[in-house]
Every structure is written in structure tokens, then in C-alpha cells.
Length: 187
Image (cartoon, rainbow, N blue to C red):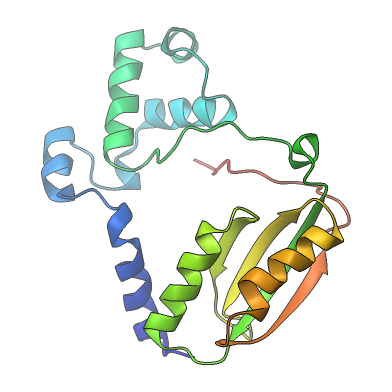
């Protein structure tokens, strides 16, 4: 395993493509430098759009005491700063035939940066992988995977895991029930 400081450096390097190109300029222009710069209105807006991104600026503004234009400006600023990174439809996997979910712990043979990056790219580009986490502990990665059935999952494991010589081992837990899933972040 990498030492903690090397791992932190690696993580910050991996997130660089997702950062705003010149955050210091945007921070100056928008008056927002970090999460502590989010005021009560911003937090109220975030709570609303996390629950339903289709809520209109007019409805949000009426509920929190801002004009629709002020809500739109705040939303635009939060998108530019990367506070809001996407607005998507969340699909029920069962309704599209993905009836099984799996939690897969993956342990790599070697922890060279290029090999970790190659696996990360492969996992993130695979349509069955819903979430990919680079973690500390015994496993190097934890994947959340959906599949139509066990045969579909076996095809996935052969494609992503068995065919990769840098994977030492992986363990799989079959999800019995999806009691809570979500992307809502407390604000």
C-alpha cells in the first residue's frame, strides 16, 4: 500500500480534471471560496435541488424568500464552482432489467500508479459499474455493480476482473435488499 501522504497526493492529482480551471479567479469573482462561503440561502437551494432538480427557480425562491433570478444566479455560481456537478435522472435498476446488485472488493497485485489508473479507467467506463471507490484497507477498490442475473454478472467478472493480470483477488457480496441508496449530501 502507498503511504498515507503519497495516497493523498495521488487522490488530489486524480481529481484535478474535475476542478475548475482557475478556481482563484472564480472565487474572487463570485465571492465564494469554500463550503463555508455557502450561506443559508445557498444551503436551502441545495437541499431543494438535491431532492428534485426539476423544481423551478420560482418555486424555490417563493419558499426561501428570494427572487427567481437570484436563485438562478446562485445555481449558476454553484455549478461554475463545482458545488453542483451534475443534474441527472435516477433510474430504478429493476425497471430496466438490472435486477441484481453486487458489492465487489478488488485487491490489486501491484500498486503502481499506472496500473491503478488503468483499472480505475476500465471500471469507470464499464456500464455495469455504478460506483467505484479507491479505498484504504485490504481491498484497493470497492465497486457497486448491477447485472440482469448471475450469468450477466459472470460475463462482467470475466471482462473486468478475470482478464486483468494485475488483480490478485476479488470478493463479492450479493445485495439482498436496497434499503437506502442516494446521492443527497447533508448541507
